[in-house]
Length: 266
Figure (tube, rainbow, N blue to C red):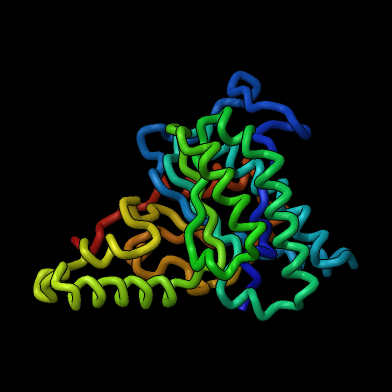
């Protein structure tokens, strides 16, 4: 199983340099069709470990390097008008990784959330974490709550971090909630439809992803948003996540523009 969070779940300020602020006037104009920008883009950030191994560096250094790609992708998505950006940050399977690596990733996550909450808020980006968050260390959960509160007013874009996330776990928990409601007499089983199931998931109220980007060339979903991505357009690139950036992200968006979405129709 790929280490989703090792693919680089952390993000930096939305401009070059620590502590700097995003200024759209300093950005080059996007080369995408503004009328066809996907509302929701999901990303499987893969390849941090392989990037580090190829350079004889520790795996954690690959994760740190991957943060630069996250910075550029968040900046580009915000710039072109993406409303929702979901980053597959840490899967339920990732807990089986070496304890030292997991601890390092959790520490990086907590420190980065604390340091850059203001940057997200200033750029009107709301942070939202989804997944089995109770699995996370208490200090990390607390920092997530603080950051979500500080950025709650962000109306330009929602940045979702999938943490301790598993698609099947999400479905099981959603089914359990529906069963609880039915047992309590709050819901008739005959009334359960696709909308009811969607409303019981972590992503309740959000549009399904229009585009999934996966780096490193792996051709699988890795247990990521299986219910939500039944008609999502897939874009796979051999580029390892630390080498992915703004130009690569815009290339993916341009490829999306070429797709004709039929949703099962003719």
